[in-house]
Amino acid sequence: MADLTRDDVAHLAGLARIDLSDAELDKMVGELAVILEAVATVQQAPIADVEPMSHPMPIVNVTRPDVVRPSLTPEEALAGAPEAEQQRFSVPRILDDEA
Image (cartoon, rainbow, N blue to C red; front, side, top):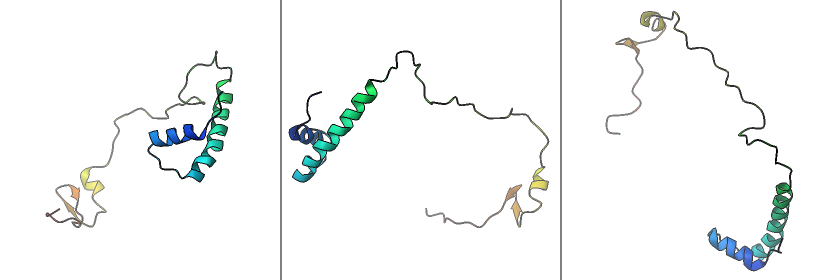
């Protein structure tokens, strides 16, 4: 792999619209070189027989069947409510009509 130059880093910073000082450019040359070496190492992994996947572990959705079963009547559900109106919980208004 070709060596990364300060001009390369300045070009990349310009493409990313990042303003870097001269000291930051000098520092990034070394940091980006290390990152590129790590990427090159990962690219050498033997992946010819590996199927593409979205997760390393199998994912199973844990759900129950949607079965209709007996539940509370509106009166039973509202029995403990401080106030109810038209088979609904009645709560204080927190927003005015001008919103």
